[in-house]
Each structure stands twice: as structure tokens, then as C-alpha cells.
Figure 1: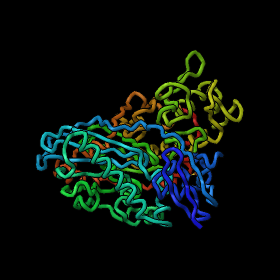
Figure 2: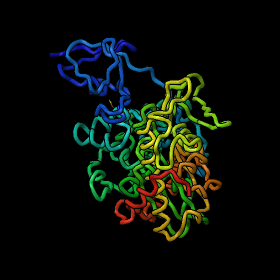
Figure 3: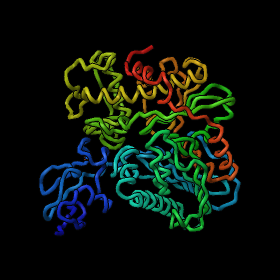
Figure 4: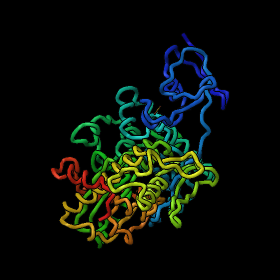
Length: 486
Ligand code: FES
């Protein structure tokens, strides 16, 4: 039997079959709220109002005509800047575009292909978040349900972003002659509808590692005249976005031992210098992007983004000001660091102030379980740093520079990252945020075929370290769970 589902916010009317999941109906119509846990009823983030009652969309089945009120959209702060400006373009094309497809956000850059000047940039939340915050939920959806839905969803977003960018720059998207794309391995496979299964089973390798070239019409209908360059992947969870970072930082030319960290839903890291470099991926989990944290949210209006301790009192700032509604990654990290300092959290992660800590006068709080999620994430990153160092026969203190790439790396307070032991405290003065380096690398590769060739060379010369296969991994990880500073 067919029922109607009316979205009260817009008046849009959808149809559903008896017993359909409300989340699935909203997903099919691209109207779904975020579903970080992939519809398993665990995260509580897909809450909507159904016929006047608050419900989880993923746990609601349709048995009659239904009215749904979706939560008000909150504009997510998206990092588009890169510390690295594009070098000389080869001038082959009048206009060039670049995309950085992140698990959470997508950024499009439009450039003058001759001078390399940035003409416009547009961004959006990755619409695949409606199928889960983490890459595994999305891969699972693609494997169990429909890979083409996942591909169409991101392709439509790219096409829309490039049209908006062209509009801002006053050109036609048909004039774009070349486009470069970076993304993590899962985003890469889901975009291209490449079988993602090998990413989920040992040895967790991508189905396609090499750089790809294709014509625009196949991916971006609005840019039929564009040649498309997809940067190569290095390994299962070290993808083209990491290669973009390597291009932007000229990693193979660095004189000093450098650690680059890109913390997103995974933490990809590269350690090395001009003589040798190794890369790894750590299962940092999406805690720092708000998932699995009870009051967690993305960095959008209403999120507590920074917490400080002033005269023993916890103070905070809110994106956009006003009443806080949740904690984004940087605020979460700061809050845990501050509570460690006040003694409300012990070195082993016990909460000594009760079951939860509430920011005074607000509804935003931190639970024991949230602290545990932070411990798991920070231990994954710290263990990765320690094991990469031992593989290269160096110690953390030998690292001369720490480059923090990506949105979280840009907004986090390095002192808090060191205070909780995610980054060795000795490295605090050597930390430098570098903005959206993956996007910077994509821009370079769009502007010059030499840079695209350079990306292939960088990917080939990067050794991959599979952390979980190291016999010392488990012990190291467990040691790193402690908040104790060294
Ligand atoms: S509780 Fe519904 S998607 Fe997580």
C-alpha cells in the first residue's frame, strides 16, 4: 500500500510503501538528515519530528500518511584555504577546476588556467553523510544496497559545485578544460563506482591505485570538455588526498624530518624527508567530527569550538556566538584537555566529577563514553606516530616539523592535542597548520600536467606501513590510551 510523506519544511510530498524505513525514503529523495551510524539506531543524530513526535528516522517505519519536520540546517564551516599557493600553470587550458572530496565536506576550486589565479571556490557537506559519517558505513551501503546511488549522490554534488563556481566567476562550465580530483580511497572508489570491497578485507588494498584520466562528460555533465585527472592512491586508507598533500608540501624535497598529519574520519600520516618517507592510516574514527559523541556535532553554528581554563574556570566560545548546542572536534579536544588539567578526568580516562561534565548553564555535556571515544582516537594517532618513528629508526623528538593538514588540523589547539598526548608534547613548538593541503595539491595538478606526473612519482615512492600487521601494534596502542604526558 502506498502512503504519502510530506516534508513540512518545504511542502515536498514523497511517496512510500507500507513498512518502508523513513530514513531510506528521505535518502532516496536526498532529504535525509545526517545518519552517522549508518541507520543502526545508535547515534541519535537522525532525529526528526514525525506526526508531531520526536523520532529517529532510521527506526521509523511508515504505516500511514506521514508528516515530517526536518531539523533546521546548520551551515558547516568548511576549510577551503591552503597554505600553499599554486605555482606556475602550464597554461594549456583557459580554465581549470579542482575538487577535494572529503568524507564530511567537498570543496571545488575554479582557476584561471593560464595564470593559476583562483577565480571562485564553492563547498558543501558531502551528501553521502546521509548514508553514514564514516567510510565503512558508506562502503557497506554501496555493497549491500546500491553503489550507483552513492556514486550519483556525489557526482551530482560535484556538478552542482562546479556550476556554482563557474557562475560566480562569470564563465560557462563548458569552458573548463581540465579538472583534478582528490579524495580518500573510499571517496575515490565510491565516486568512480569501483568495487570498494577490497578496502574492507585484509590486506585492505584499493581496487585501483594508479592515477586515472577520463573525459568530463562521464563524471561532470556540466563540463563535457574537461579532461579529468584523478590523483593516485597509495594504499587502502592512504588515498589521493594524502598524495595531494604530498604534492602541495613538496614532501620529497624536505630537508628536515617532517611529520604530516591529516586528521579526518581516519588519521593519515606521512613521516620522512627527502631520503625516505612512509605513510600510514590510523583508525582515528569520526569522534573529532562529532559522531559517536553524545553532544558532538560538526563545526557549524552553535558548536563549541574552543574551551579554555581561565583562573581555574572553564570558558568557551561558540561558532556564530549565542547558546551552544554541541561540541565540534576542536572544542571536544580542548574540553578533555581542560578537564585533565582541573583533575576532573584522570590519566586513565576516568571521569572523577560524576557521569558527565556539563558546560555550566547549557545543555552541552561530556560523558564517560565520550572521553573513551577521545582516548581511542588519540591512541590510534599517537600509536601511528610512535610506530612510524620506530620503523624509520628515529624518536619523536627527532621530528623537526609537524604539518597539520585538513579542517580539524587547522582549527584544533595544538596545545590541547599535546596535553592529551595525541601528539608528543615535545613537538608542540614545531607544529604548523597548513590548511587544506589536499585541495592545494589538486589545484596544482589541475594547473599543470607536470604536477600531475609528479603526483604519480610521489605516490610510487611512498612506502606504506600497515600498522595493524606490526607485532608491537597492540601493546603500543594500549599504552597510548593513557592521557599521561611523557
Ligand atoms: S540513530 Fe539513526 S542514523 Fe544513527
